[in-house]
Image (cartoon, rainbow over all chains, first blue to last red; front, side):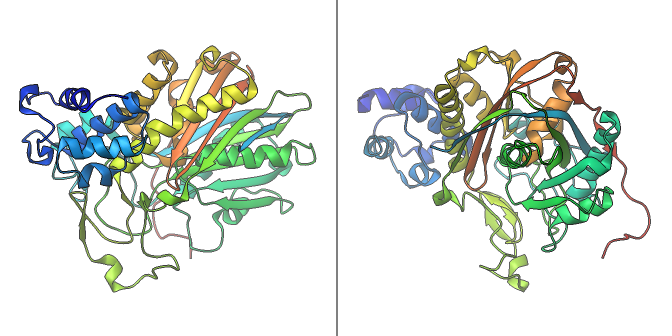
Length: 77
Length: 359
């Protein structure tokens, strides 16, 4: 199973303009300038590939921090 | 496990009809509802839909009718021999009767005809094919038409620029000893509201409130229009479609990579690229027509074959086709076409002039 640190790294890879250093486990990702539903789709694709977990839109919408989302992924494993 | 195989059936031909009018997504029309989140350029880049065909007059059945007439002529079929017609659509002509009944008469088919509507969307061509194959496999009924598509909607309102209008015809016939079709099917009704038209059925009867505009995922729409939970559908598509292909290959003991073409429902480019990547398919094996026609619901698999594979189909070709979407519903079929399969030229349908002859 991938660690929170690995998840944060994979999460940050989905952004083009936001520097990876700006994204930590505690980042409120909906507040990032670059965040969009499109990045949300990339995150869902990453989670599908790396964890074989099918996230729902509500999992992404209702997560506040990157760590929240990681916990939702882990709960579905 | 919902696997099924029907032997002694072949696809005799495929055709597709679209309205003549082309709407560009780089220059949206007044009532095109592009989400406020995107510019037109970003929409085209993300969805892979540059343009699509539209008509405010032609219904799905009008397009299917023209496609069917073209195909019957190209095949040289005697209409009196066609004893089954299945119409797959979520934009039927009327709430009732079934559009398949209207098409039986309009196409001049015999009254000795099995006709039914199937209310499925993006998975519909694969389901419809299994319906007609099951009718034909015993050899009592020899020829059938499968008409699939979606076009003009039930209610006026801001249009979703992802979706294009198309109606297709697939001619299927009994041939003793033909290899037939292998299917896998699945359904997850817990996602029934992932793609839904909330009002106008009996659950929520149509009323004045049905037409009040609400903001849904950045777009203005009313309750007689189809709304979509984009992330849910994306997540469903990329996980379910590859699994369905793999399950079918495993069940029937073949290597799916030996197949020539993988024709997926044309959902949007991001989703389809991800599905192809997960199955490790080389891009030349995965034809696409969404750039010019958008997402055409149950028409998307046959219209992709018509517009992208007409030349290739002149020799025997191994196909895997997978439809997935509203329901949630999915289906995959594997078959080998023979070199006699007719793929008609795309039919561009003119809008009817004058008063409508229909009730």
